[in-house]
Length: 154
Image (cartoon, rainbow, N blue to C red; front, side, top):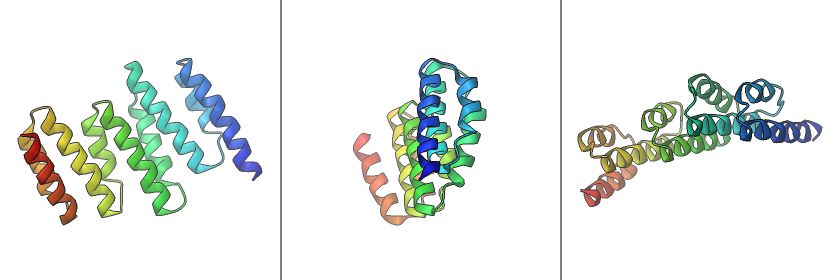
């Protein structure tokens, strides 16, 4: 319990640094968070804010993916990775969202991210690339859903 309270306090500190655009200090402080799930959440927020600020986020993204992979339990790891992928997708970072999907071991959830990436590409007029992604989706239900949604967007 002590570890969780310490983690939350450090998370709050990291978020204050991020809101002040003190990203380097936030990236240093985040490493002191003992709870992997809280650390992963903090890194995800740092990545999102770096993208919004137009800063280089590549190293933070790598750290965020690694932290998510270290979260105990496949479900928690998957949720963390999906959250980051969808946050990046909202910010237009399609390639990064697709890259994150590769780390999701649960095929159904990976497929959901891939489908949303494909639909985002279709919205941008990149229908051929969207279809290619949909064709490679391994979950047949999600593939069918994505194909239907794509047809409605055309």
